[in-house]
Image (cartoon, rainbow, N blue to C red):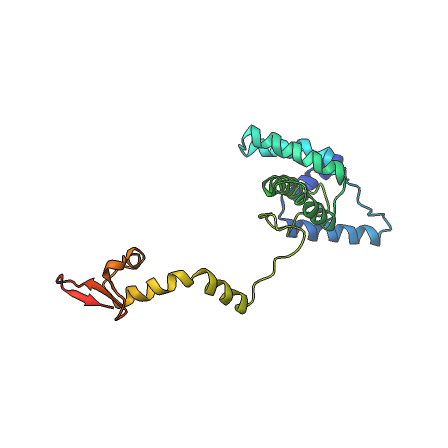
Amino acid sequence: MTTGKDIDRAVQALRRLPAESRQLVVSLIEQLAEAKGVSVAAEYKAPIENIGEWVTKLRSERMSERTVKLYEYLARQVLERMPKPTKAEVRGYLAKRLKEAKPSTVENERKAFGSLFSFLYKEGLWPENPMEGVAHVGERWGEGERKCPSPEDVERVLEVGFARARMPTHAAYGTLFSPGEPRSVTWGVVEDAQKRIAVPDIDNQAGNY
């Protein structure tokens, strides 16, 4: 005869299994229950009710108390808006928050929420991890998407932005100047009539460009 202690031990063993193995075992149990006419409707506590266990786990991992309190605060704030979040709701929430707060603030919310649901899912306290696949929050991009410039646009920018630097660069290749020196050339070394620049060569003799 199976006792309550037997069931508790089985549940504890199930929680220690890798996620994929646990899902397989749960699926087999559900199939057996359905074959016997037993309802298998899952009943889970609301995520916010299991925050205490998660916080204990964070402290056991030697996370700083400041970070633990920050994560707990942020997780509670998010769960007040989304008590039982789905992946679509999480993505929508983060996109909306990026318009309201700094990216670093939203990234902290993502980390806190991700840590919470990773714990709940691994411990069998929630059926899925809505944060799985939700990417790192980078810098704010605004409401629209940034368009990649065309090759023609790039060429126009280079033509305008680097026109002043093009001639000194060419001069550097034809003389003994270092790349930065042509910018400091004075009119005294420029021979207007012949369009040449007098440049000392290695032996201190005059060279021309």
